[in-house]
Length: 164
Image 1 (spheres, rainbow, N blue to C red):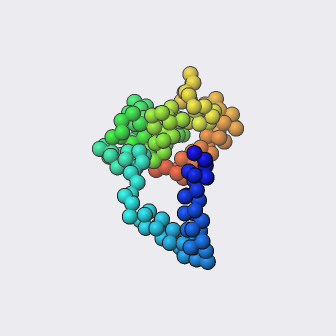
Image 2 (cartoon, rainbow, N blue to C red):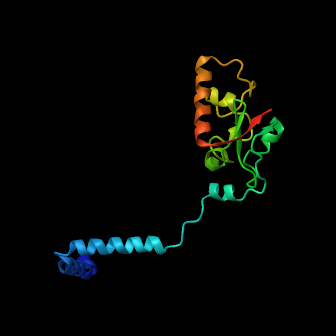
Image 3 (spheres, rainbow, N blue to C red):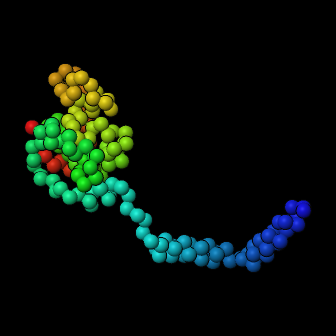
């Protein structure tokens, strides 16, 4: 079996097709684009991703403006998909559920969830240390970093309460 015997018919068919569309490449291009767009429009919609499912499955509504104790906040660490994921920063509590891939279980910042993450953010740590959550020993650069993080969270996530 030579390659000409195996691929010969396919090459011949390809050459015939190429010759038959010569001069009408634009028609073929428009046809292919139309088929693609129709397929995208008619295809079933993609399944919701996990964070959308989490957002829609809450059974426990958030009380806006609530003051969370350390123990209360710890219940919103992402381990229960029926509850939102909350993070405390400089006395405020944010709902970060839409960032569940980052703050939920297995995420790179999962340690921030369900706690006052101020010290970890200001010190650029992903694990709490022995002084957590105190920020009393922060220098100017750490406070600036924490303030930047607070601005980031305030712009991206919903403020839902405060820390007691």
